[in-house]
Image (cartoon, rainbow, N blue to C red; front, side):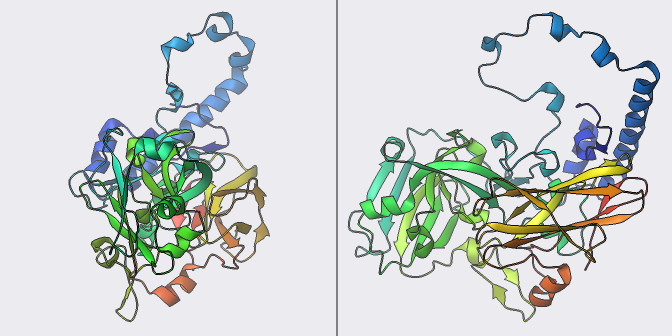
Amino acid sequence: MAMLNRFIQRAPENFLSARQINDVKAGRRGFLASAFASAAAAAVAGAQAQTQASAAVGDTNILDLPAHTKGLGQPVASRPYGQPSEFEKNLQRRESPGLTRVGAASVSFAPLQSLFGIITPSGLHFERHHQGWWDIDPSKHRLMINGSDDSLIKRPMVFDMDDLMRLPSVSRMSFIECGANTAMEWNNTAVPTVQYTHGMISCSEFTGVPLITLLEMCGADLKRGKFILAEGADGSGMTRTIPLSLIQSGEVLVAYGQNGEMLRPENGYPLRLVVPGIQGVSWVKYLRRIEVGDMPYGTKDETLHYVDLMPDGTHRQYSSVQEVKSVITSPSGGQVVLQKGFHSITGLAWSGRSKIKKVDVSIDGGRNWQAARLEGPVLSKCLSRFNADFVWDGKPIILQSRALDDSGHIQPTYQALRAVRGGRSIYHNNAIQSWLLSENGEVKNVQVG
C-alpha cells in the first residue's frame, strides 16, 4: 500500500480487501456505500496518526539512512520487463458491480483519480470485451480487404502482419472512450468514484498504417464507396459501420503499436482499428476484415445495441462522435481532503470533434466559474490535463468542470442534456460532473442541474 498523503487521501477502492472485492464481484447491493465509508474513516485515522507521530519524534525517514542508501540494489537482469513498484500494486483497473456480464464478456475501468498527465499506462487502460479477450498468434493473423461488390475494390487483398509492418507507419496520440462511459449517471445512480463514473476512457500513442493507404493499394472506389464495415476476429462477431469520409482524412489507423510497444492482448493484439474521436466500439479489436460498401450495414451492434431511446420513442443510431466532456479527478469521489487551506484541482478534458479550447472550474455548484490552466500538449481528439488553484475554508463546496472545444461545442448541464435526450438514454453522457466536498473532508458524487 502506498504511503498516506497528508493532504488528500486516496479513493478507497485502493484499500479494498480480497473479501470485499469478492463481495463487489458478487454484485451485493448496498456494499459499496458501507465499504467506502469504512475505508475512508480508516484512512483519515491513519493519516492523522502518521502526522502526529512525525511531529512528536521528528521525521526519522530523513534523519536515519535507510538500507537502500547504504546497500547494493537489484541487478537489471532480475526484471527484464519493467513492473510498477510493489507499493503501487493496488492501483488497478477494476470491474464494476451491477454491469451485465455474459460469460467472459467484461468491462474494467481505468483509475483516473491516480493518473498523471494525459497518457494512460497500457496496463491500466480500460477494457470493454464483448466475448472476452484473446492472445492471438500474430504469425497466423490475417487482414482481408474486399468490397460489397466487385466494382468497389479492384484488387481484394489479404495482409499478414509482416506485410503491414513493412509499410510506412505513423504514430498519433488519441483518446478512446466507450460510448457507455458515465452511463450509470443517466438515472442518478451515484457510483462512488471517478474510476467508476468516467473510467471507461484512456489515451495512448497508437502506431500503424493509415487505412486509406491500404484501401488505395486495393484500388478502392473512393467516390462510389461511402462506408466501410470493420470486422473483428473475436467470438462476438463485432462489426461496425464507419463513414469513408472519416477514413479519407488519414486519421483512421490499422494499428499494431500502442505506447511504444505492440498492442496488449486486452487492447486488440495484434491488430485493431483506431478511429479518433469516435466511440470505442468502432475501434474494432482483433481486426480481420474491412469491406467497402455504398450504404450503412445495420449490424447487430449498431441497431440493437449502442442506440439511445429518445423522448419521442425513436432510436438514436450511428451516434458515434464523443462530444466535449471533462471531469475533475482530484479532489473527486471517495477521496478525503485532510486539511484546510490551499489545494489544487486537477482533471481531464476531451472532445471527439477537435482540440479543447478552454476549461472552467466552479467551487459553488456552477454559480461562478474561473478559467483553469490547460497543461500542454493540447492535441486534437486527445485528453488534455487541466489544473486550478483553490483555498478550502472547511465549508461544504461543490466542485465542477466545464469544457469548451475549438468547434464551439460546450459541455452541458444535466438539465440541458435531458431537455434534448430525455431520461432513457444509456450512451454518450457528457454532462457536467459534480463532487460534494463535505465539512469532514469526504468527497461524494452528487448530481446538480
